Image (cartoon, rainbow, N blue to C red):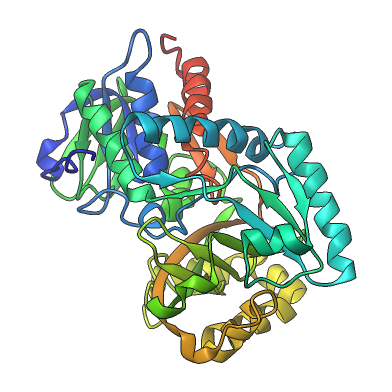
Length: 417
């Protein structure tokens, strides 16, 4: 089993100066810092995390699914980096004895219209290089998921599950063993240029960095703007709530059961997923909320809400997707409605089979024109590189994204290879 997670004492543990500051102690920021420390001539690296623990937000509240790369437009960064990253992640977990499982996933078509969409998913996945994809129905579907019901399914044997928080902590150990530094409790309150680079400040300390890489998740847009980048895209928080199956009903789901998603939205729909600890979750919902850390619906932060409501893209998105928004609101308000959505492909599900489950908040990049950005997005400012959008499959692709970001940083910052 992996060793215990390293302890990080807070702002005082950050050095006065480093070559590269990586802002964000989620799985992606840690992967980027790890990659930098593994280069032939590594720069001095410091990770600055706003919370008092690592992987506190999306990395620690994800579905835990290692995505194989089926959904994404061929040629996109998501398609390329997910397929590469997932393979590397399996190897990493094996080497580091992190519990994981290639449990497989079925994507189910329950209507004739969805059969055409399933064929498009198969085409995309095959083009992207996803291994082992095949159509299943009848006895083969029943063997994979005996309680599922569909006209046909697409089976991905290379999809799996892991605890991404455990992966993030393993990356952190790698960073520290390579001589990097990690400081938690480091919420940036000031960002200025100085003679030798950038000066990053929190309430009680300051770090001077030659360059910075921002992997700030829900706060990515604010830090990019503070560095001189444009406001587009804006981060809009979506809260995802799950239900968990009661232990005596977990047998209804063997691995991962997904619907055919709406191809025009960057969400995968209500699905059923078995986690590495054996729990089975139903969800998530996708409800726009009033705080970037709104794990409880009642959490509202004035600055976050104002950012969302003042952004023109929010209103353009709502005008286009109000029907979808109404459905999500119904799912969030009604346990019965959410179970009914999942029962389309697992008919034995009943409202009494579920209990309240965990929640997460997705940092969704939203364009000024109302477009929900689907691909990974990066931008640069003077002495800084910004990850502006890295939602799912960001965790699955973390090692490949980190290499991509480190390569870009090498070119932009003139770092050694």
